[in-house]
Length: 110
Length: 117
Image 1 (cartoon, each protein chain N blue to C red):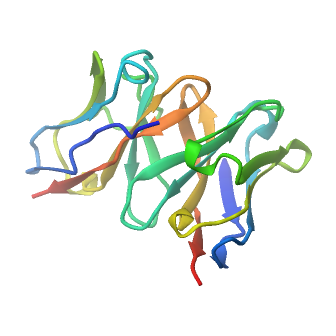
Image 2: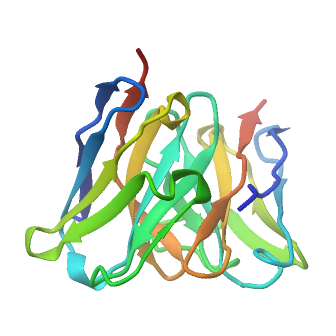
Image 3: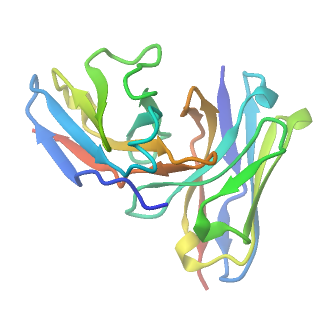
């Protein structure tokens, strides 16, 4: 049950695109197409942004997209906006009905 | 409105116990797995436990096994987390979250638990 690995911080200018990586192992990210991403503003409830690697819940901007290759999943945010500045967490199914989160990446919009 | 509201957090001494509650509304509670996730101060999110729709299966992160018990009352649309033998490292904001489509799609606002003497 080791946490998935994310960069501690990422940054970009308004209008640019950024990608946040999420590296796991063959026991979690690599074995299941069940990776989700959450946007979290301090003091607020986390919000689901991507599920099942690539799917967007209703109401989430199409500027957010997800992908996966091997043991690494990625979240891409295009057309960065000031309101995107938040913490982003990945989460993967880890088998036996358990889950594991990444350490979180703080996105700064310059 | 689909909503989860946590309660029961507070200050407790090391070795003490606390019972968290999560009240669900706006959806058929008995049709979903429910999860508990926590965030220690300055740290990331950590999945803690979950429980199947009918309560027949429960799973825990290793660090809380034998100390925490998750349960639910579908008649009262409520989720519970009984926390015993609390340690300083259990200090965190505790969230309840609904499981759906391989993700946690609805989250509560969280309740703070502080373990300190």
